[in-house]
Each structure stands twice: as structure tokens, then as C-alpha cells.
View (tube, rainbow, N blue to C red):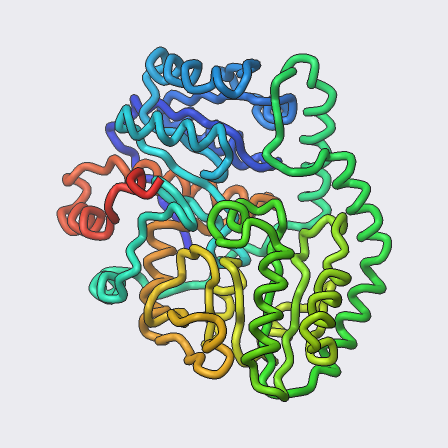
Length: 433
């Protein structure tokens, strides 16, 4: 998939970057926007932000959280900002920025790891996931699919764990070294970086053994049907903000309890640990305790590792809060229930009843609707690429430039394109925020 840059006459846009991931994506995108005649600015909240932004026109925010709205509002006016680009729309500072953008009628472009993985990055206007303005109306997707290209797999491979880990360590240790300059900065994550790294060191030391045990467990899975329940990170805002559980252990107890009471007697529940879990919490112990308490210990399998495609191939259905594994399961034609807010949760795709009935009443998704849904995502809400390899970064920057400049495309670029853009643009996401 190639992206030819289309020069627009709108070279006076003012882009403001807020926090991103420990990756060079924002810096590369900012450099590309500058080269195309746009004004580019950045707010740094800690030393790691400064390390990953070597371009000019950055400003450090060193104040307290309550001072942020006034600081940002002044910056928006002084630098004539038209667009805000940020990673994650649930961080407290970003929520405040989105509210200000609504008041000043600015565009907000939210970046996240892809709705569909691997090889995709979410790049959506207004909000993502639970704050996405995409409708839940199947007819809306079916009406628009005829104007969209066929679905294509992303041409880029996912980034390497080695690069991701290196850049994460670089970001966090630079942040700690500069704490004197940013004395009021507080991370949105629940644990200090050193504590998380201690957990990761232990998990990495045991990873080979864990992978071997997981592979053996997958090979020995018996019972019919098999249900998959992928765990999400406990610090994930999708769990903390966009679900009724607020914490992973509550979701575990709820799912296992329902499974024990209502799933077929011969069925099995496979609980899979998130691959990026730091290992600070003994999730295997929590799952085992819940399974024993609900008297289904022999029917619940915990996986720390293992290949997800193999597990999906064995599964009859998937229970998720709002994990992207739900999207992968739908692409495999598996029944899915989403217990929290998820962009893919809609009639025709996911089960709309309660969990107690899902175990026996689940039906597969409508293949035609899923194809339409996925093609709309690719056209409106995602770009191909990766945060953690060079090929992926280049592809993502090219696609992001195309998407950003298309947001201001004039009718002269083609009446059909303008009509499609207007027709497929959902209602303002600020109302949902």
C-alpha cells in the first residue's frame, strides 16, 4: 500500500504534539510536517519527552496539573494551533486538552496501538476506543463499504521487542534523571518505572520456561467447547475507564464465576496473560484461586505465553473486556462478547446479551458486516505502520501525513472524495467525551 503525498495549499496549519509513546514516531511526523510547510510545536512533560523530541519549537510544562489548562489555552492562542496530536485520550492532561480543543473548535488526532494488529496504528480524529465517535449502526457501515478499497493486510512487520524495550528504558531513565527540572510530573502508570523493570527482569528470566509450559498446555487442551479469555494490562485505561470492572482481578472473578455456573459441563476456559504484563502481579495465582473458589479448577487453564493464533484456532468463542484480541477473533469468524466499551462491539459483530447466556447462545459474527467495519477502520481510523522498526515508522509517517492533510482537503481535490469524507465522518466525538 503506497501513499503518494498530495501537496495542499493549506500550509499554515499549526500542529501541537503532546505526549506520545517512547518511540520516534511523533518526532519523525513532526519533521515531515515541518518540511511540508506546516508549523509544528511540542509540549514536554518530562525528560523522556525531551529525549524523544529533537526538533525546535518545544516548550516544557513544569507546573502542577491544575495549572495545565490555563498554560495550554495560552499556548494554543499564542502559537495559532489548529490541530493537537496526542497518544491516548484518557491521560488526565490529555482529557483536559481535548476539552479545550472542543471549546476552540480545534481538531484532535488521537494515536494508539492499532485496533487491528499487527502492522496497524490507530490514528483517529477526536477519540479512540470508548471515546470513538464511530456509530454502532450496521447499516452505516454497509452503506459506505462500496466506496472503500478492499481490505489489505498491512505490509509492515510488527516492531521488535528489543527496540521497544530499549526505547522504553531510555525514555524512563531520562525522565528520572530530569525529575529536578519537572518536579510536579506524575506518570499515568500505577507503578514506578524501577518497580516495573524489576518485575520485567524476573519475567524475562522465566520466559523460556513459561513459553515451554504454555506450548505444552496448548497441545494438551481437551474439552469442547474451549473459550478464550485474554487478560488486559491492569494499568490499561481501557480497563480503568472503559469497563465496569476498573481492575483486572474483578473481571477475572466475574468471568470465571459465570463460566462455572452457566458454561457447558465439558467446556474449558483458557485465560491468557497479556504479553506485555510486567509480572508484578501473580495473575496465575489469582486465576487459580478464583477457579478453585468457583469449583472449576480442573476446567480452567492459565497461559503465560503461547502463540495467540494457535489458541484462537482451538477456541469456540472469545470473552473479552475490550481487548484488541476481540478484533482478531472476529476476523477468524469466532463469536465474541465485549464486557466493556469496545469499538467493535455492535449488533451483528458481537454478542449483545449477557455473559451468562453467551456460553451457550453465542453466534459467529456477520462476515459481510465485519468486512465493511474493518474497511471503514482502515480508511478512517488506522494507518499501516509500526512504532518500533524503521520500515514501519516510514510507512506510518507517510500515511499520517496523508490523513492529516486530507482532513483539510478542499472540494477541488474531487467532489466524490469530498462527499465521501463528509458522509463517513461520524458526529462530533467531543459529545462522547
